[in-house]
Structure formats: structure tokens, C-alpha cells
Image (cartoon, rainbow, N blue to C red; front, side, top):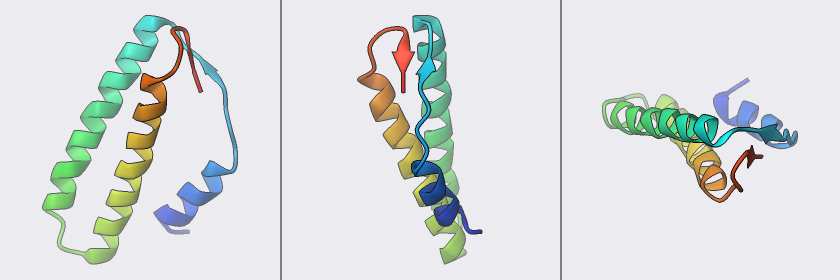
Length: 77
């Protein structure tokens, strides 16, 4: 199964996650670091299919970051 197919399958399931403010901030930092690393990896990837998978992964993580930024303190989901 390709990364894109895995992402689509995962989007069908919703999980609620309760986080403290500190946990939320640490998760946000980790996701931001990962997104930045993916940006660099995409820029240095020659294989088109792999680049597309990395872009899909980056978009998914950016979506999580966006939702996390709008989550009330103590809860992200």
C-alpha cells in the first residue's frame, strides 16, 4: 500500500487525544521540526513518486499542526 493510500485509510478513523498544555506545545514543536525536515527532503529527492509521498506526508502533518493550533488548552483531536 502506498503512503497516499495509507493516509486516506487513516483519515477515516478519528481519535480524540487529551493533552496538557506542555504536551501540546512539545507535540507542536516536534511536528514543526518534522515538517521542516520533510521540506528539505522533498527539495533533495529526485524520484517523482517518492517526492509525491513526502508531499502528502507533509500536507497531512501540516493539517494536524493547524488543528492542534486551534485546539483548546488540554485537548487536541
